[in-house]
Length: 367
Ligand SMILES: C=CC1=C(C)c2cc3[nH]c(cc4nc(cc5[nH]c(cc1n2)c(C)c5CCC(=O)O)C(CCC(=O)O)=C4C)c(C)c3C=C
Ligand SMILES: [Fe+2]
Ligand SMILES: [Fe+2]
Image (cartoon, rainbow, N blue to C red; front, top):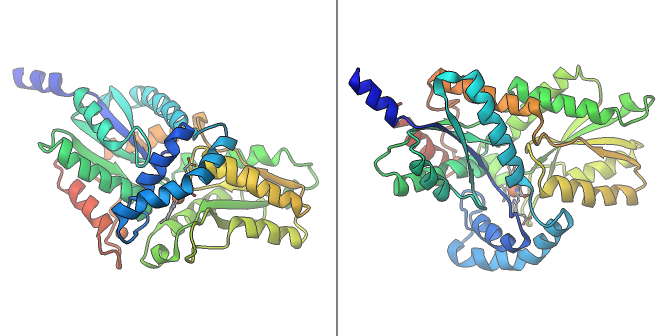
């Protein structure tokens, strides 16, 4: 009929918004990146935040600039995300023609492209249906929760008429494609060890740590990371000894442990010379893999006499991983669900109701 033809004309592409923390592409971008990060109460609540955040960021900038300098002058996360998005989009048009054309967008929380710029671009492109697809496989209020809250706030400003209908993929810690990609990267890395030590290599899964105050208010991140690890080990038929450890804690308060660097040294003391680090909570390379794991811990291990420390490659633009991304989106779009899960409940001690707020926003959408 005439009406449905008109509706089709107005349809526009299906927008797939890849949400992540982001990183500074250049050294000049480090201060802005850190300022946005320390301004985020969903990540770090600080008293007098708007006044103190720029001061803390400025003080920390030289140290972090030095780290980005050592990994090539900036974070590679934007270029990896662009590659992943383009490849996913092409694949989706093939495997999911009923929602074609798909168009991928990026919304970083602390570095360009920021949520507001992406929303403006989506309106320009005539997007009416969009999926907020977190790039953190495991949910945390401090990461995906923060990104969803930002999307909620900026949508109210930029799209008050709600011309874009949203749905959310908020976690995918045990997706078979993700597990397969991790498992293959581990198998590839294990081949670099001599055949007589291969079975003895300790797989040290390493995830970004979380402050214990966040863990203790019921954040699901740590258990979802453990779920990923368990599935990967199942897929590998528990071929090697393994542990889950936590890296990159900042500041003096208690964080989830054991710490990755202490675990490496501890294993060394017990006579384990062959250790494979597996970054398990972030899919692309970033400062934590390239600087902290490779350079910093690599150096510490060397000093302790450990000669067999290696790292599994990040998933980056691995076709198996990109296929997993496309399948996650396809299954989600076909399910007709507004949230990929309904697990995002109010944090018992989270006064800001960060998770609840984003759920209410998306639950009110009529797809
Ligand atoms: C799944 C990943 C991450 C979780 C969980 C996470 C929680 C978290 N982080 C901070 C504080 C900082 N994080 C910083 C950098 C940073 N964080 C992640 C990932 C997670 N963070 C990444 C990938 C990066 C680096 C980006 C890159 O390009 O490499 C920083 C800035 C760097 C620094 O100053 O050391 C801070 C600060 C908290 C407090 C937190 C949980 C509440
Ligand atoms: Fe972090
Ligand atoms: Fe919360």
